[in-house]
Structure formats: C-alpha cells, structure tokens
Length: 87
Image (cartoon, rainbow, N blue to C red; front, side):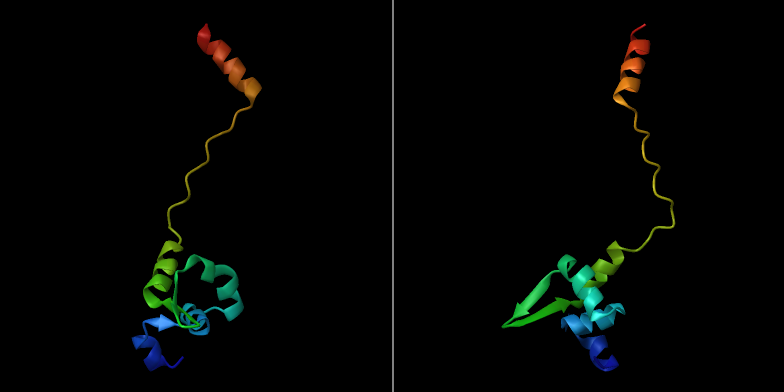
C-alpha cells in the first residue's frame, strides 16, 4: 500500500487494512476482521476505512479508572442481612 493510495483509498484488502492499523495480517485476521464489517466485490473481501477507524475509536482507552465492581455477598450473608433488617 503506497502512502498516496492509503490517503485516498476507501476500501482496503485484509493486508492493507492490517498495514493501516499497524498490525500484522495474522493479528488482523485473528483479532480484528470478525469485528469489522466487510464489503464483497466479486470474490474480493474488502474493509471500509471508516469501519476500521470506528473499530479504533471503540477501543480507545479512557483515562478514567473503570468503575469498582459491586461487592458480592454470599447467600448466607443475604439471609443474615434480611434477618437484621426485619428486626
């Protein structure tokens, strides 16, 4: 994929899509291709630049820490809490 072509191309082969994302073709096939819609033209399988960009945007990490998971309580603890609440 030449740089001039990369800037103007709307559809990429799997190899060019991998290069666009900066990953190997194997990594693209194993971890990306199933999550990105494809475009079939005859026997060719192509990927839309906008869909690849959307895939990137969906995976950008937030700088905010993830929310803390709610504490899980056992069934016995739930029984004790229910008993205490009823008094």
